[in-house]
Image (cartoon, rainbow, N blue to C red; front, side, top):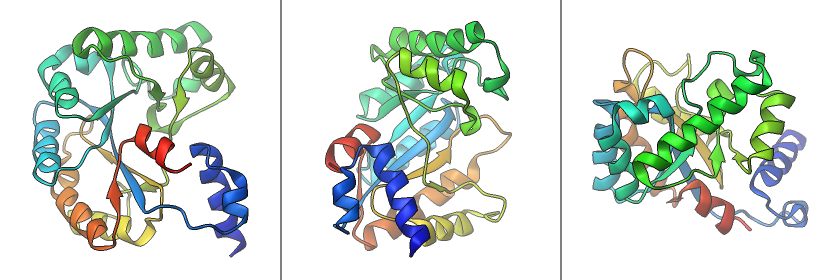
Length: 222
């Protein structure tokens, strides 16, 4: 019970949910945000977009700037179909916190510039590659006006080796106002994510969850 309370307080801080609401044990709304990292990808991102359109679900895509430049038509499709886009750096450094201040700032700036030039949308959310964060990354992102977004449930995990086990993992760990991490790019194959997505959507809907973007989650959870 204590662990759950601490987790709820952490979630409240991340989403700016009034702390009094958590301490009063008020139930959080059954919203969930699906997020996808490391795209756009010429194969997997369109498949994921097809599934989201089929189920009429909006999601948030944290895009790599360099890949936006490589596949601009897919980035434009993400935005045109009503999804949200976030900054995931320009080149996805393996350990961003180890870079110097100038390099970190350039990674953030170039990513947003690429996204805005291609889609016309300037991202307001930032997710550091692999979730690696230190005072330099945090300070620069905040000074540049970004809200930093992590996740509360990861579908991709070493213990989830198949699409079905990925879906089961999400359904086991989900909670109101959860942020689900999935991927649509970078490693050799993301077919697990593609095939798990319909099972995740159907399973969450059966439990009464409504799908929102990160922006909507911030607004509706207050």
